[in-house]
Figure (cartoon, one colour):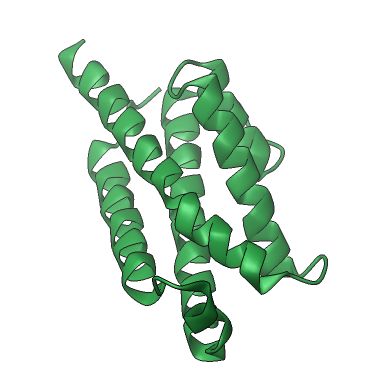
Length: 145
């Protein structure tokens, strides 16, 4: 095993934070503003989508660097990090839900209720920040050991 590629992971963490800042910038304070602007809705959805992709890239980099096996899908990537105590189980559950929402938006498995999407985009960005905090703790623990 080569070990943790801290620089690559940190770069992805920075990209994730950038996506979250953009989402916060694009997401209006009121649902009516969100519903009234297709461009704004799509910008928010894209920022959220990219945030999810960066989060999953970080998961997969750690899985690869730490030799934790081969995940079968996105949710398994998150599950593996929880299984190996990189992130907490409670956070993993929230991130798996985020990934499901991302799949709904990106792959259009069903009609998206834009008012529900607004609430999810507004309320769930904190889960990404919790993810970043737990990954930072994991990286620090690897450096200290």
